[in-house]
Amino acid sequence: STPLAIIRASGEAAERGILMRSGEAFHVFRSVRTIVFDKTGTLTEGKPQLVACLSPLAATDRLLHLAASAETLSEHPLARAIVAEAHARGLTLETPTEFAAWPGRGVAATVAGHRLLVGTERFLAEENVNLAPLASLVEQVHARGQTAVLVAVDGRAAGVLALADRAKPDARATVERLRRLGMKPVLLTGDNWHAARAVAAAAGIDEVLAEVLPGDKAAEIRRLQAQGQRVAMVGDGINDAPALMQADVGIAIGAGTDVTLEAADVVLVSERLETLVEARELARRSYQLTV
Ligand code: ADP
Ligand code: MG
Image 1 (spheres, rainbow, N blue to C red):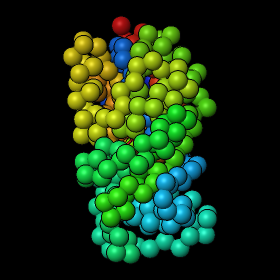
Image 2: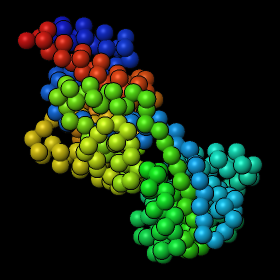
Image 3: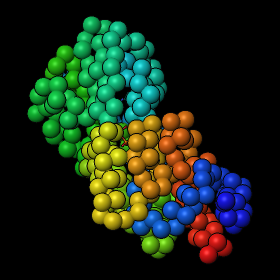
Image 4: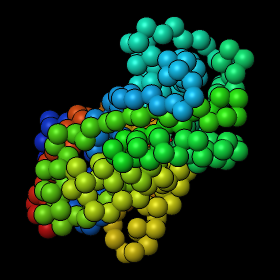
């Protein structure tokens, strides 16, 4: 039977927007020593802005028109930011005649008869695009800690879109409080190393795992567990579901999708990271009451 103290604690938790799928999650959370954070929408606000369109050849409005048209069918936050900026500039977008989303990589689409690739360096390189003409532009974007989204048109490198996302205002304080509670913070993301390090620095996190494909995130959690520590994973995206399930405690933050909610042991209703500290505190008290 479930100890009374846990039932009481979970009632209090629910009032604070902390939903526990089991009393067990409380027990496990108090012994977690490593806490892994997803980046986009977890440590950051998850509302990236397109801050620059850079191209060595074409007019940047043409570049944005093609790239944003290719992204109209993607639900990724980066895609939404690119489409929003195109609309803000008064561009009328076209619907791709062909479209494929590559999770953790980008999108491939046909727009007005042109073959578009929009995504990571790795993705375009895998598709045999020569990225040399974009190297210095990508470096500029990375130096600012932003995400470089590369664009190829008909197999040729055409430009770079720079996207910026801010760390949540309570990221740094929350990380510091969790550290004082004996938890080591780790950042895990599919984004590039430069953008990942910039967000980690803003949040006060030293350990960073970047450029991890969605399918490999659970393996990274397993690797941390193999070091003998109980691991919690905090995330918000569909991509994170396998990692949330692999973790000893999977924590979904914000308005998570249904998939994520089912994968999670703990659901934090609001986007405030500070709720993590409250959840940990409740877990500690439930323990004290039951021993
Ligand atoms: P995260 O770990 O931040 O959730 P994802 O795994 O969703 O990141 O994506 C990793 C990277 O793949 C993104 O930073 C971006 O560079 C690229 N990417 C993914 N989807 C898209 C898209 N629709 N358009 C452009 N780039 C994308
Ligand atoms: Mg994600």
